[in-house]
Length: 90
Picture 1 (cartoon, one colour):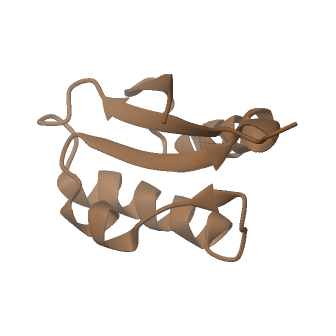
Picture 2: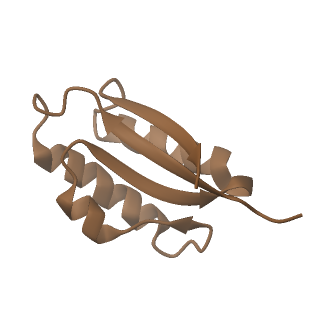
C-alpha cells in the first residue's frame, strides 16, 4: 500500500490582531518538533515568512499524531482559538 502525502494548512483567523512573532514562534516550535522526522516535510523558510498561514506535508499514516502535536503547540503558544486547520491531499 502506497503512502500518500497530505497537506496540512494552519490558517490564523485574525492574524492582524496577533503579532507576527506569535505565529512565527508557533511555527518554529512546530519545525523543532518535526525537523528530524522523515514522515513530515516542513520548511523553515516558509515559517520565517509566515503572516497568516503555515503549510506542511505529512504522510497519511502519521496524520493523526501530527495533528495532536499541532493542537498541543497551539495550546502551548496560547493560540488554540486563533487557528483553523485544513487538510488536503498533496
